[in-house]
Image 1 (spheres, one colour):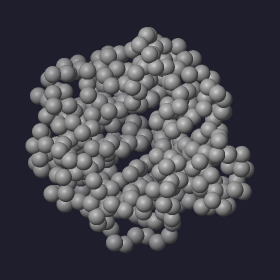
Image 2 (cartoon, one colour):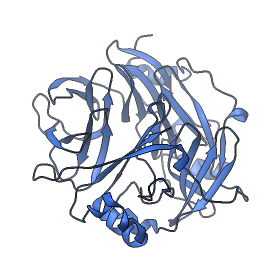
Image 3 (cartoon, rainbow, N blue to C red):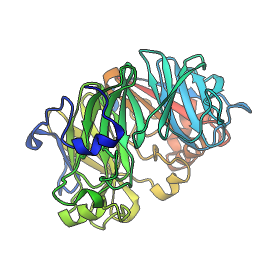
Length: 398
């Protein structure tokens, strides 16, 4: 089916590609409001085969301040930082190679970058801006730019020439061209799968509903996506868009309407839970969340896919303090009993490749060393000072 014209998208709200929705009653479910959990801390060490630490080389050209986005291929690490004009490319040992996608108006130049992704099969590095995507070779050579009229917030490669797109946030859903999730082949101009809406539209009319606060992480063959105010985490891959698992945050229908309203923000409600991030491994779904307006207190949940066993633990780390050092709050993570290193909470997860990628800033690591003195004994962490570039940690799963 050829890609839908920009002005016709809202007229085809029922088209969902090859999707076959699984019954909600059969989906794995993480109940954040449960009153009882299996005792003991959440374990992940037995799923980890090995850990690779990659300190990013620090030069005048590769000095990194705040990390805005990053992506990792089998050979390279790409980092978009507030300190540099463009995207920094490192090899998998952390050696700085070059800066690409620099700011400007000529061929290969970029404006406002919103996300990075890699088409591994075609060896392409892809830089998304609002309404366009630029493609570069892994050697830094500019290939081409494709204009895109769809109002998306993020793009992610989910296969050769295939992009998953997450719709623009905080825009009323009846705006021409608006959509929630889509999968598009940029080489053939095909629409593979498409969802106009992803929540219960009986609650609110389209003109009063918007997407709020996208949260995403890799799935076995694509990407898991969640928008605040709904109960479903969606799996978006190169074939279809389908529900993956459910999260019960405890919000009533009226509170859900308030969360999803295009006229309000998405303020947390006391006594209810808000999802901060999640990731998948071959055996588990893990969720990190906070309760109500007290965003300094975070909870970690682990759901065993096979048994349905749900565990929860409370983080001892103050999130407000940690947020100043790393917006991903990677330091609020699962206990690392594999090598007694940093808490485990990946920024990127690739369950199909059995790989997870985490980044921790140098100041965050110094903060964690003070909170967990045993980290000072870790040989890699001993080499990190507050002036170092971020540390990339790659977990290879069993």
